[in-house]
Length: 81
Picture 1 (cartoon, rainbow, N blue to C red):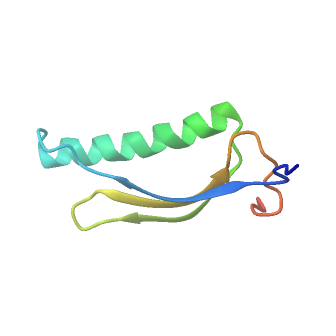
Picture 2 (cartoon, rainbow, N blue to C red; picture 1 turned 135 degrees about the vertical axis):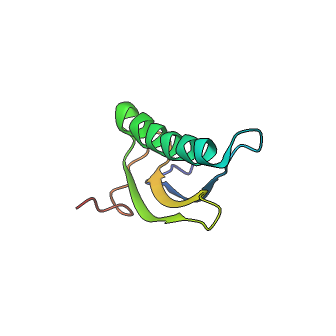
């Protein structure tokens, strides 16, 4: 029998601007969406570490994140400072 001892995800998320909005409004929407994503993880108690957050030339945002998978122990992978 096998059992998962620990697990985490490494993700690159691209928060893109909505095409049907003015650029400034779409850029603000992206920033708000990223903040909402972070707050959701905190509220749910998900352990995570942001490795890189990069604003692209078009004001979209790339977020490289390492985060807990389900409720698995991830202390081997994520060392929160």
